[in-house]
Every structure is written in structure tokens, then in C-alpha cells.
Image (cartoon, rainbow, N blue to C red; front, top):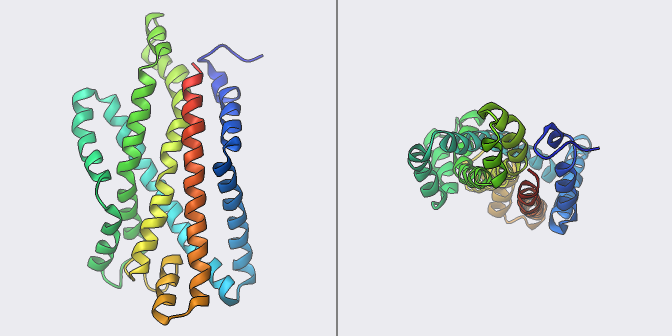
Length: 265
């Protein structure tokens, strides 16, 4: 038997199961998850087998996906902290902290990475480029996280919990955190396609991953300059397919998880 609404059972079952069902029922998200799983397996297999245009495209995918994962995780963490701190510090601090985030989301931030790559020069390392990519992804995550937290704090069950005399710590543990985890996870996911697209664009221009590290963007740029359609097809198709899958899963997460957050208390 499930516990009452707003208890620790939120961490184990109920809304979590419903959110998962909504996510897998969303066709683009289900297809995206399938594509990403198949891609991970193909990249792992390609690293072992190697050889040929397909093996080269899969090896480049390993570099791009690894970079996007680590820089995306950094951007997601920074964005979540940014949005959560803005909400926690009150309305005046929120306005001051979120104004630059909102302004930055309207700018073509993807162009910042190739600019940074040009300034750092050919000896640029992976770590500085990953930090810049994380900073590029963070503002959009912060805005979405702030919106999700604000919507959650306006829900009636939190007012009822406060009226019932629950302390701030108990409200946070029993109501806010269980209800916030899923929508914030959906917000964090948006950093991954942003990081991959930013790195690929910069590498396409020769200003992304360092020399000796070949990602999809690097492979596409080299194939275009060489006029090699065969070498171009693999990385271009895999990059487009991965971005489509990431966006499909992200859309499904926002739909499923925001519904779940609104449905349990």
C-alpha cells in the first residue's frame, strides 16, 4: 500500500512509475531512447572492431559524446544551482540573478566556443573547452529550473503543509524535493544537446576539440574540405540522428515529468 501524498514513498513508486510510463508512451521519446541505446552499443562495438568509414565515424562519435556528456553535466549542474539559488534567495535576488540568464538565452551562445577556441589557439586543452561549453549550456537550464521551481512553490499542497505547521526542513524533504526531482531532471537534460551541438559547430570550423581529438564536427569539416562524400555521410548522419534523439527524449521528459509534478502532492 502506498504512503499518503507527500511522503517518502514519492522516492520509490507512484509518481515515478507514472512518469516513466508517460515517457515511454511518448513516441518521439521512446524512439529517441531506442536510438541512443543503439548508438551507445554501436560506438562501443566500433571502438573494438574499428576500420573503415563506419568505424571512423563511430570513433569520432565516442569523442563527441564523451565531451558532450561531461560538459553537459557541468552545464546542467551549474544551471540547476543558478536557478535554485535564485528562487531560494527571494524575489529581489531572483530578478537580479535571472536577468542575465534570460538575456543570454536569447543570444547565439554557440558562437562563443569557436571564439574561445580561436583565442586559446592550437594548444587548447579539453578542460578549458569543456568549461566554456558548460557555461554556454547553463543559462537555459537555469531559466527552465527557475520556472519549474516557481510553479511548484505556487501549488496548493505546499500552502496546506505550511498551514499544518510543518517546518521548512520537513516541507523541503517531504514535499519540495520529491516533487522537484523529475522536472529538474528534464531541465538538466537540455544541456546535453546544447553541448553536443556547440562542440560540433566549433569543431566543424576547426576551433573546437583540440588537435588530435576527432569528433563528429571535426570529421565533417575534414570531409567537406576534402570533398569526400563517403567520409562525410557517416558522421553527419550520426550527429543528426543523435541530436534528434536527444531532443525527442527531452521533449518527452518535459511533458511526462511536468505532468507528474503537477499530479502528486
